[in-house]
Image (cartoon, rainbow, N blue to C red; front, top):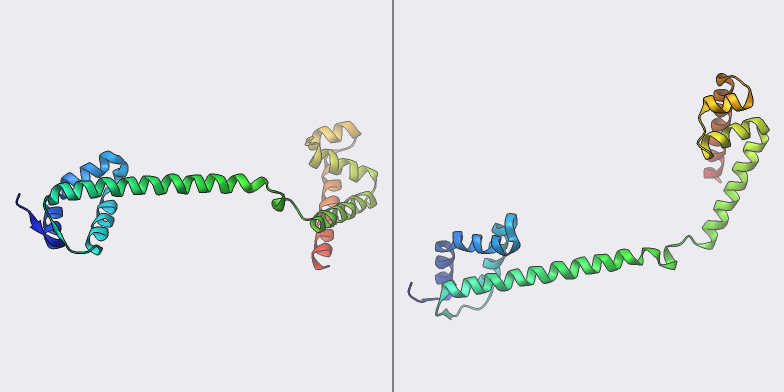
Length: 171
């Protein structure tokens, strides 16, 4: 192939060597994105200054190699940045602020008081079921009561906590 000058010559060479360039890019990691990489490469070349190229085929393959190297470096840099950013998740500024801790403690006190106001049995049934993960039938057996009574006690607790939640959210 004889030397061609300028990007118009490179464009013709790119069209002639398109299949080989796609295989070349795929072999270097572009796989499914080879078409996009080739398009990006062409835009990069076309945006550059127009100058004669002695061996356009070699020029295109070298440019493709360099472009893949740039993509690989950018990917590694992006992954490292992402990894470093995720590592900051344990940073002190991600911990709850003092005010949020105080509000959460206050709300917990309200919940405990609301459950206690329902009586010790309802409080015990709720805690065994929701906090300890004990089944309703087992709670009924432990306390010597019917399953229906356990369900009613849980309903009382849920209703009271739902009302408390509405009250706390409006404050």
